[in-house]
Amino acid sequence: VQLQASGGGLVQAGGSLRLSCAASGRTFSSYAVGWFRQAPGKERDFVGSITWSGGSTYYADSVKGRFTIARDNAKNTGFLQMSSLEPEDTAVYYCAARISYSGNYHYTSPDEYDYWGQGTLVTVSS
Image (tube, rainbow, N blue to C red):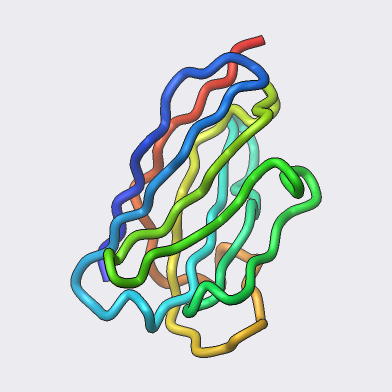
């Protein structure tokens, strides 16, 4: 599966952005999707994930309550809705996918994902 992330940009603190992850090449509904971010000079960190059906989501503590992950399997697209953004959220955001039919298990390590989008930059100004 090929992934393409989009929707990044510059936003003021307290604002919102919605990132999209468009998939092509394989049946999107066979894949669990994870979102990660990487700030300059730092490791790639887990943001959140969603199961193949969309029935279960899981978030890092740092974004819980502010970010929401969703997916539309009919449109082969995943989403990361970000609200109450903070300067600390500034990073390149990546979507990733792996085949999984689990209804409730969430993969939180980058090493657990097989396919990656190219990343989209989110900059939050104070």
